[in-house]
Amino acid sequence: MAKNISQSNVKKHMVCFSYAAYAKILINHLKSTDIPIERGLSDAELASIEATFSFTFPPDLRYILQEGLPVGPGFPNWRASSAQQLNVILNLPALGLFKQVSEGSLWCLSWGPRPGRGGVNAGLEKVKDLLRKAPVLVPVYRNCYIPCEPNLAGNPVFYIDSESARVLSFDVTGFFREFGMAHAPAWAPKEARMVEFWSDVAARGDTCGWWSGKLGGGCLDEVCWRLREGGWKEEEVREMMMMDGCGGEMESGNQVIGWRREEDMGWRVGLLSLVLLRGGWTREDVVYSLGLHDQNEVVDENVTYLECQLCN
Image (cartoon, rainbow, N blue to C red; front, side, top):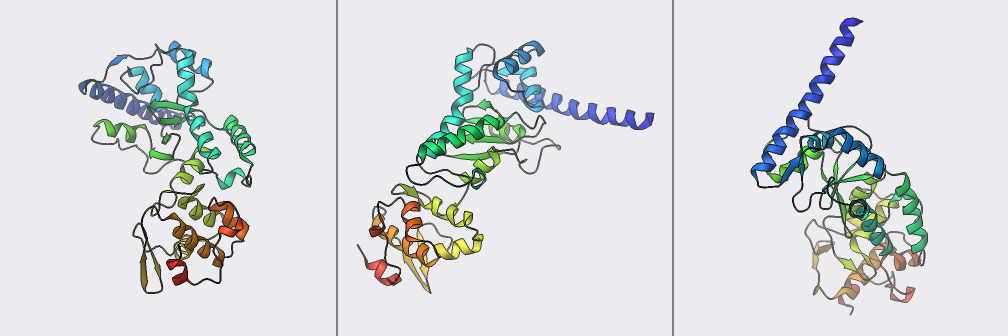
């Protein structure tokens, strides 16, 4: 038994040493790139910050901040910034989500049924309630944040602003490679850890990469996501949306139909509504998903693809 305890202690010490060694290398590298670095945060300073803002620094970020405190543009200055300034930075992810939800460009299946038209306030209240239970995102640099929970090394770094949310790197070591760190340590994760609430948000922000752009009050990405939420498989979504893998083209039978002018949104709406109707959607669902004003704007499902192509 004593032998097992000894081995366990050695392994734990080796892991901690790896993070401490990496933190030293990283801070020295940042100094070499002329990023201002102040002395690292003391245990007392870290404890004070955590008590003030009700979160705990994840271990890998803690090692870095103890080794040295980056204070260049974009880095949070945990020592000199006021509590008010730091609160603003900490609240930016939530404000970004609120904007996306209020504009109708973001809703996750795990949040429950999406509020219908006119339900913006209900949607925002739901997200606020979920955020109260979600792990706090600790700022690393500009719009890049790392969740404080689980309180383990290796949490992913998220990028969140008022337009999008995504996983930026699998952990802080991957993030700092953007600052010229050539190699990730051997213990760096090979995939992003799942984090309550935020992983769903990031996954929602990564949908439908082959189409982009807003369409009326909604967006083409939203149509793809709604199909997935309805239980359609990825290949079925591609088939229903008739995408050939090339941005801006659709195919009908053996004929590839190129989009008309970028500003010719009416034709896109007509064709998309036809596709969704034939995919089993109700006219009401199509109106809501495409951001239309009423059901009269939806193309009759008996219209042929060619007639839809020639409309407008």
